[in-house]
Image 1 (cartoon, rainbow, N blue to C red):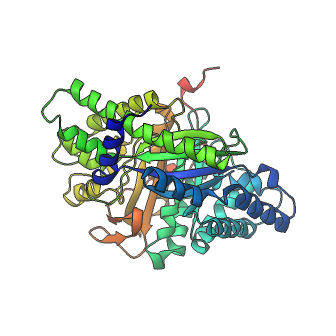
Image 2: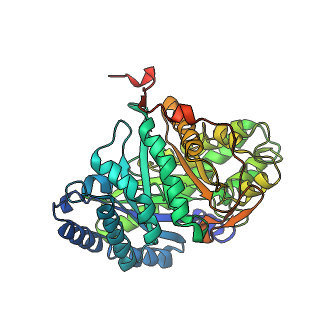
Image 3: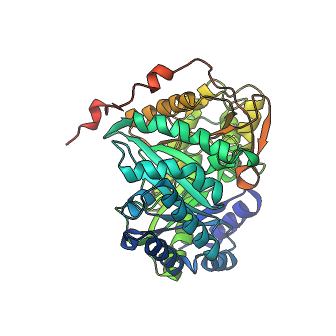
Length: 454
């Protein structure tokens, strides 16, 4: 039972500390939509999404009114489209048509994003996988709400370097296709190592093939709540610090668990997971970087940053798993540059570099996220950055991701404005030395020895 004191405490978190449920995401399997006729496939996909998600937005709004808990986004994730469209699609243009269908369905049901325009190619690419990947620039330029992801590596299979090279080129093309909007298409495109099947957060959400026909996943976020709690224990030792973070994460997860259960009951769709991710927004006080400063750093990026982030990430997970038996997705601390005012300030002050961010990703829950780089950055350089980040995930048996935005026509020292939750970002410098010969080798980097656990 939740007592009166807990209700008051939760209300305070919502009103003053930016606590919110970041998203309710319905995962929808499209495997039963597969057809060899493209027109029939698109019709099946559209009808399945509408039938399953027609009440999602209204349900979210009803829960908001009843409990007073802000639910910022309502979203959909679907089975990776490379699997669904393989039989019907003969060209990249065919796949792009499916992206249009997804966009129409998303608009019809009123969700802000739909994820799953995806391919899973950690060991190799089928013809359908490659066609979908080559269609990504066109698909993201022609749609508003479609998000795309590609899993390029895993601890079990190693890194598909052919796909890594191709994705460097695709990211550059996507930037060119959407250059009139400051290369915004790249903000809807992410590459992964060890992508989870149940992630409710965009742009990486897709509905894994091991999931049920439909599922409710909830992502809850409260960087401001954690920061406020830590302000009360300034100067205390690490034991007190860790206990404070853990207890706060427990409370935040309880809110997510409540919303997930209610949404599941009202929609008649099974509850999947709560993703407890400290996902920041551009709002003042809703910053992971500010938490790191509260722990004792002058700026994010100062010596000690990686250790502080490791501590934060671990305690968030420990608190979350006590509040729900089904914590999943990514769960931990996100460090997207453009979406976190404290990170933006740290970059502007010269405290935070791309290389330091890479080190921080060894211990956080995502990777190099929402980072704007010069528009003239070479495709092979982008591929090299991707390969470095995937190697961290592969060796450490964790999810890592890269969402880079080469902003066409802009360079270091300039700023790009994305708007809304995507925020704005300073263009960060990239190491100018070449990795062309490394990327051009092709093939696959083998899995590490500890992957062999059969």
